[in-house]
Amino acid sequence: MAKKTAVGTATRAAAKPAGGARARAKAAAHETLIVEVRDAVALIALARPDVHNAFNETLIAEMTRVLTALDADDSVRAVVLLGHGRSFCVGADLNWMKKMAGHSRDENLADATALAAMLRTLARMRKPTIARVHGAAVGGGVGLAACCDIAIAAHDATFSLSEVKLGLVPATISPYVIAAIGARQAGRYFLTAERFSAAEAFRIGLVHDIVPADELDGRINEILGPLLVAGPKAQAAAKDLIRAVAHRPIDDRVIADTAERIAAIRSSAEGREGVAAFLEKRHAAWVPAALRQE
Image (tube, rainbow, N blue to C red):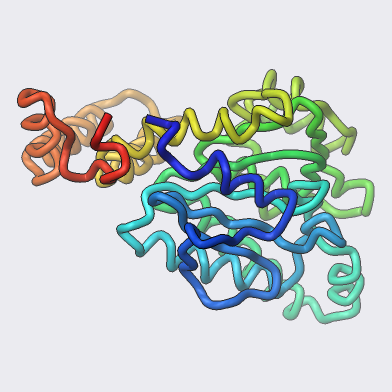
C-alpha cells in the first residue's frame, strides 16, 4: 500500500521547494514554511535553509496556525514534518535570541509561551505525525522530533540538546524530550550538551528507526501505508489513550477508564464500520481511494 502514497516523491522537497501539479496547497503562502498535501498526507517543510531552519517568531506563529488548520481538515490523514536544505532544524535563531535578550521578562515570557503552545499543538494533533530527520537536529529541532508520534532519521543525522552551552535550558521542549528518552538520558544530554549520532538517538528512544539518507523517504512511505488504512477516529482515540494511561498505576480508575474507552469505540460508527469491513473482506470507508484497489 505504501507505494501508492505520494510521500516518496514529496519528501524530496527537503532538497528543494515543494510543488508540482500533483500538490494541493492547504494554506496561504508562508514566509517560513512550505505546506502541501499529497494523497491525504500533509507535508510541512521548514523553509529557512539559509539558517538551517532555525525558529523565529514568524516560524512559530505560522507553524501553530498550519498545524491547527491541518488537524481540523478531515481530508488530511497524516502529517510529515521535514526540513529544507542541509538540516532538519537547529532550534532557535541566534539573531532572534539576541533580540529577545534585550526584551523584558514579560516579553520573553510571552515569546516562550508561544513556542510552548506550538510544541503542544504538534504533540496533541489528533492525526499521526512523522518527523523526517536529516542533517542536524539541535535544541528545538530535537523537540520537534520528540513531539511527533514517529521519528525516522538518516544514518548521518546528528543531534544535540545544546542549550546549556548558551547558558540556557531546554525548557519548553523538555516534557516531550523526557517522555521520549527518559529522565536518566536527559540527565546526560541536557547537562553535557554533547552532540550524539543517529544510532545513539535510536538507542535512547528519540527516533524509531534509522536508515541510509537515500532510503529515508522510502521508509517513511512504508510507515504511511498502514497509517492511511487505519481508522482516523481510532487513531485519535489511541493517541489520547496513551496520554491517559502512560505513567499511571494500574488501579481501579485506570481499569474502569480503559473499559469505558473500548466500549465507546466499539459502538461508534467507525468501530462498527471497521469490524463490518473486516468480516466482509472489503476496505473500510475511510481508506483513501488510491489505496482501495489493492
